[in-house]
Length: 400
Image (cartoon, rainbow, N blue to C red; front, top):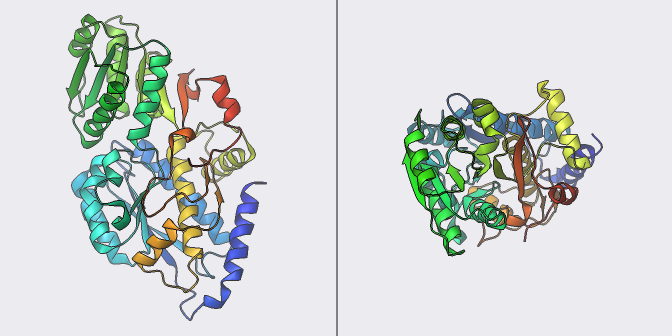
C-alpha cells in the first residue's frame, strides 16, 4: 500500500483544506452513477470495471470522502443491451447523482449519450472505445468524457506494429455492432495512411458460431494477418476457425483480444495474438503493484479477468473526485463539474497513466497513443509483446 497511501493522504489533505464548505447536509452521501454490463455476455469486463470503481470509492471514503460525506455508487446493470442501457441511464439521473461513470459497449453508450448531454450531467466512459462516443457532440459543449483508449488511436497503433513486422496483406473481420463498424472504419483509415487496402473484409453478427468460409476466402486472397474488431466470444470463433482450417497466420486487434472469453474460448489458438493495451497486469512499478495487491485482497482474486477495465475504472473515480475537490464554492451542478474536469489543477498519479490536465474544453479523451503498449497472449495470459515496452512501462506515461 506504499503507493495508494500517498494518494489517500493527498485526498485527505484536500478534504481538510475545503472543510469550511461542509454544510448541514454533510452526512448525506455524494452519489455517483455507475452503469455497465454486470450480467450477460459482456460481464467479463463489466465486473472488473465495477470492482475497480468500488475499490477506489472504498479508499476515498477511508480518507473522509467529500467533506465528510461518503461516496455512494448508484449501480445500474445495462446487460450489454442498448435499450436497457438507455432505460438505466434515464433512471440513474433521477437518483441525484453528480456524475456518472459508465459503459463498456460502444453501441450501448451511443444509445444513451443524448440522455447525459441533454441533462448537462457529466458522463465519464472508462471502458467503451468506439471513436464516435466523444465526437458526437462538439467538444466545447460536450459533457461526455473518456478514460479508455479510443479506437482512433488503438487501430493506428496496431497497424503501425503489423506493418513494421511486414504483415501488410490484411484481412479485416468486424462484427456488425456499432463497435465493429466504428473500429473497422478506424482500421481502414489507418491502413490507407500506409497506402494499404485490405485483401478481404468479413462482416458478421454477434453470436456467430462458424466463420470458416470467410477465413478460407481470406486465406485464398493471400492475407498474412487477420485484424479482428469484435468482442471476446466472436474473436475466439475467428481463432478457432483459423486453427480448424490449418491457417497459421497471426490475429491482431484492439483490447478485446485480452478478454477471457477470447483467451479461454480459443485456448491454444489464442496464443500469440497481439492487441493494444493501456495496462498489463504486471507489478512493473510501485503504483501498479499496490493496485494489484489491493484488488487481490479485496476480491480474493489471484488475477483480474480484464485488468484494463478495472484499472481504468479505478483511475476514473479518482479523477472525478479530484475534479470535485477542485470546486471551491461547493457548486456541484453539471456545468460546474464539467468545467472542473476540463481545468483540473492537480496531477493524479494513476495506475494506467499520470493524468496532468487529462481533459480540456476541446479534448474529452484522457488517453493518447504514447500511453499504449502492445500486449500478447502468452501461456494463456496477457504479457508485454516487447521487452522494451516492459522497461518503458516502469514509468507511467503522461498525455501528449
